[in-house]
Length: 208
Image (cartoon, rainbow, N blue to C red; front, side, top):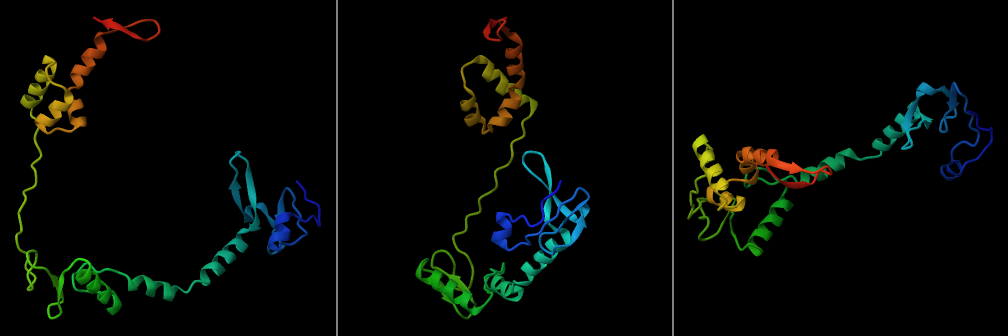
């Protein structure tokens, strides 16, 4: 594997890479620093055709370029900007005064809530009092998960075997999801599958 000295590629012209690049079987010249290095000092890339290629720049130049790129960031300003818009979990706490004013304006003008400056909270008649207590709270109990006992499963199988009810009607009647229902009726489906009669092409032609 060898590239003639002085050969200028399109990328060399475009990115200002060195024009003189030498490539040998045991190593090659880095396109950025121009130092001849062994192949194990280059990152290896795999093309979609399955072939592996070595990067044009050495590992050291890649690391230096990455470090220079990140040093260009003003991390202090980035962190300050991110902290500016943090919404605290605790009500009444804001990242800054601007965030507080924008929230008060939105709540009072758009949602028609009132703001209690003394207690630092929002309130609205019929929903929340000025002292922070909620009104007209309805305690909705969580639905209890039904236990599918063998007796209930047998009843479901029995009803389905009679042929007078569909799976959709069973789901609505017992409040059961499709996956649980199919697991309960799994035995029936297996029996139907075993009774099928197939022809040589694999088509169903009847039942035993």
